[in-house]
Length: 231
Image (cartoon, rainbow, N blue to C red):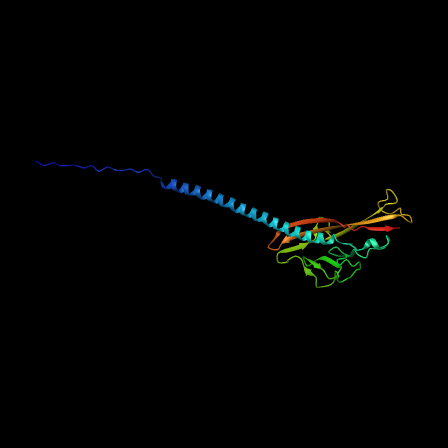
């Protein structure tokens, strides 16, 4: 007696995606990835611009702070209390142009103006802020660089009408004797006058590697050593 075992083949159907579905999925993924890359690139560019502006602002602020701290000493005269009240102060603004300032103060406290030791200066020359500590004149050479031209360039602050001077000096006079005379235009012999000066510094800087990164700063310096005169 024989037994026959018959095995029926079964067709197994597995779930999956069609070719069209795969192509649509790839297209959507590509679009999503492209959007993410665009947002990422924009974020990186924005952060780079912000960092460059911060760097530029810090560089200009440091330069202005250095200039401001030293210029504030203008007119300091050691032992001035021992001189008659109407004696002119030998120290003060020595030379001033739109791009250069030379000033003096009694650094060695000997009461005497020494052109080699007591006269200092700052100037804009070929997009660089330069400093003088040995009395050199605005039109002379051998000034020292305060800014690095390979990193930062300095220029005039520009408005729609004109360029703003790097250095601007405003002088005021107050008549102590004549009440209300704030310009010293109504002076009489024996009037006590006080002259004060305010210096305004305007700087605009650009990063050498990115000229579009531009920033402007200004500093107002009230020179503390006022001149007291008797008319």
